Image (tube, rainbow, N blue to C red):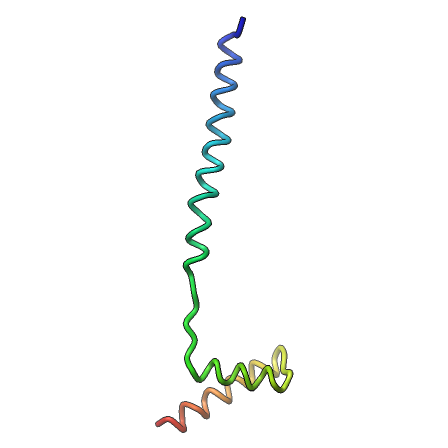
Amino acid sequence: MISMKMVAAAAAAMIVVGSGIALADTAAPAAKTKTAVHSPESIQCSKEADAKGLHGKERKKFRAHCKKEMKQKKS
């Protein structure tokens, strides 16, 4: 015969498994909805940095200078 301890243990296990699935299911959509919006200047400067094969600090410095120049030309 099934004892009360076994019933309680089974119920606790079902709660733990069920809450884990519920938490995992609700967290996934939030991560997918975040998107970054980049300015046209940023996109163009990134393409130029890619074409030049720049990485790291050199890429960051190039992009900052490029975006600054593009904004000045716009004004």
